[in-house]
Image (cartoon, rainbow, N blue to C red; front, side, top):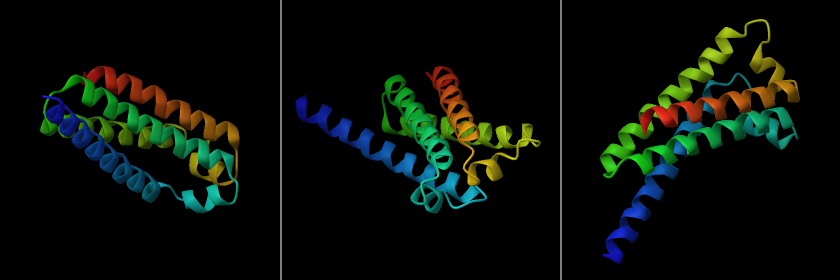
Length: 132
């Protein structure tokens, strides 16, 4: 029994980390600036925005793991939640045309980076509750 639970936990962990990293890669491809270069330069706004996405993605996977029993269900609901989080990111960008989120974050506007982080976290809480 113990080994089965350990194996199941390790599979959930590995699959979740893989999905989070995959989605971080996709998010980084969608931004009009290079996330990693901006963070390396000390751009706090970029770090907050990307950090919020990472926390949001992890939170979605947390709900998927806690609400489902099998690996297939976890992956399916986790991916569904992550796609929703991606859509929220795109909607945030689209609904704030005057703010020009990508430009502001690339320019180091910490307020916009923090707001982006909060939107990612808030959306992940709602998405997580919806998939559980």
